[in-house]
Each structure stands twice: as C-alpha cells, then as structure tokens.
Image 1: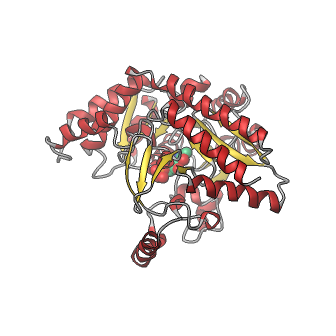
Image 2: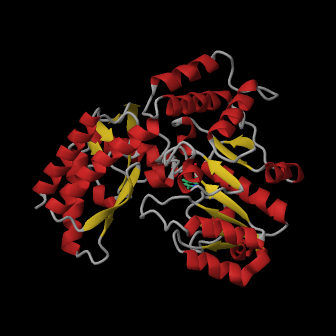
Image 3: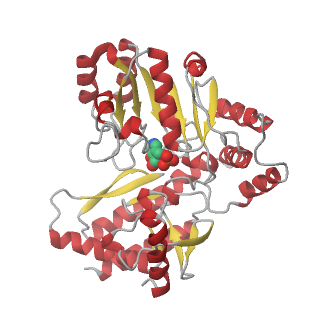
Length: 405
Ligand SMILES: Cc1ncc(COP(=O)(O)O)c(C=O)c1O
C-alpha cells in the first residue's frame, strides 16, 4: 500500500497543480486507489522508484517515450556532451541539420523534416500544412492526436473549444475502411487531409488492404495522407508505420520515443508539401533546443546499431505468449490485442460485475507486488527489459491471478 506520506504529497500537489499532473493520462484511477504509485521519483533501465522508495518493473514506458530505458547512459552521455556546448542559440545549430539528415536516412520516402516539442504540436502543424497545400479545410481524424482545438473540436463534451470548428473535423474509428470511404464519397474534394495513427496497440493489426486503399482514396480526391506516428513511430519498426505497412503517406509526424524521453517531436514528408511552410506560420522558440536533438541522434544510433527492434519483438513475444498462457490457465475474461512491441488486455464485452471486480483485484495485486502497468492495460516493452525481468513479471502476474481465484 502507498504510505500516508505519498498520499499527502499528492494531495498537497493537487492544491497548487490542477489535476496534480501535466498529463491527463497520469491522473490516478479510482480502481487502483492506494496501490498505484502517484508520484515517481527516479528511474533506471526498466525500473522506477516511487516516492516511498518502492521499486517497480515498469511496462508503461512513460506513456510511450521510453524505448531504450530510463536514464539510458549512452543517450544521457550525448546530452551531457551537448550541455557543455549550450542548449539553444539565436540562430540554428548544426545538430538540427544532422538529425534531419539522419531521419531522412532511416525513414522511407521523406524529403524534409522540422522539429517541434510535442505530439500535439506536430499533428497540428501537419494539418495546417495540408490545409495550406490543398486550400481545403475539412479533415478526417482517426485516433488521438493531442489536445489542440484542431482535433478536440470533434469532441463536443470538452468545453472551451469554438463550436465553429466542429464541422471541420470528421472523426472516425481506426480500422473502419467503410467509414473512410463513406466520408470521402460525401465530401469528395472537401477533405484536406486524413490524419491517422498507423497502428492501434489496443486492436488487432488492420486488414492488409486497409492502408493501401486509404492511400488510393487520398490520391483519388487529392487529399494529403498524414501518418501520426507519435506513439507507434520508432516502436513498430525503425521506419515506423511506413516500414510496417509499406504505404507511403505524404506527411508523417513523430514524438514520444524519438528521443527516448527527451522533449522532441518532428513533422516530415514530401518536399512539395513541406515547402508550403513559407505560406503559413509554424514556429516555436525552443524547436531547435539542442539537448533533445542530441538525445534523438543517440537514440536513433542505438536503435540501428543494436538491432533493437528485433530484440523488442523477441522479448515482447515472450511476455505476450506468457500472459496469453496465464489468461487461458486462469480463465481471465479478456484477451490480448496488439503485437509484441505493444499490446493491451481487452476485457470481454459481456464481462460480469463479479468478473470485473476479480480482474481489478488481480491488477491491484500486480501493483502491490511491484509491477507497473499502464492504466489502459497496454504493455510496452523497452530495450532494458531483460529475459529475467520478463520472467519475474510473469511470476508476479501468475501470483496475482492465483490469489484472485
Ligand atoms: C498518436 C498520438 N498522437 C498525438 C499525441 C499527442 O502527443 P503529446 O501528448 O506529446 O502532445 C499522442 C499522445 O498520446 C498520441 O498517442
């Protein structure tokens, strides 16, 4: 159980930080009250320590950025080296060019790259470019793309977003090609862009024809296809969804794992569309901040040199296979969806209240025994998870499953 000190700390933070966090998904979940850590003090490799000094094997990856591991020495050394040279200047620094060049080298089919700071920033930037390029205003949005008005306009329950923007965003679910087709048939040349996640770690991979057909529809109606790789990029594969699906979007955006946890995001794509930036405005003072760029260069180097993705798939598969076995053995009312580098326990639609309570009891036990899982039940593997960490995690899951029987 969390200590009184940890709970008091959180309550004090609530008084001066609305929601006691900067990130919506870091708000506590009622079901895990008292066992899910509220405040994390430090991390190393695949483990972190909460403010009670309790250590957890982490499978949340800090909501996606941690691909190599916390406080990864080689990345942090690159940052320290850059720190001695300065963090930001009144004119661009060479490292901006170096990283842009490296990204063009590892990501298929992109000509130009620009840097911003958050996933929301780059998604909004890509949509602005697409609107400027096509002279159209409506977009199709598939998946979550950040908190900006550009996307949240589609969700009426959020206040503070001008209603006039609502008709400009047509939001449809992932993996529903008929819905994409239907919108295009109705809107035809009104659609500036389709912005879509390339993968949903909470679902099975889409049908093989899903993305090629979406590409064809965008070509037919002259719309820009944008892959939002903020979560999937550098996790699905080195070349992200582009490499995984072998489909070329016109623009692509990255964030999260691009710099193993340092604040960086990027939008990239075809020269013809990226050059339209001259006709609009996309700018931020700290876009060329050098520490995150150095972290990203080091991260990309390690991902390639150590063939990290093969390892992520191998280790993720061990965990996924092990969990599948336990789910079956203990008749857990749900199944794993996704792929080894990112998968989610999806509970059965017809789960009874009693079964749900039993799942929550098991999950509370998992926290108690020192394994941290994402509250959306998504498990993300990092390069720091060893076979031993996976074995230990599976043992803890089995103990929790057993005790809830
Ligand atoms: C696919 C996707 N796009 C965009 C975002 C927004 O990124 P950020 O929170 O860095 O603004 C997220 C965040 O979860 C995301 O998963």
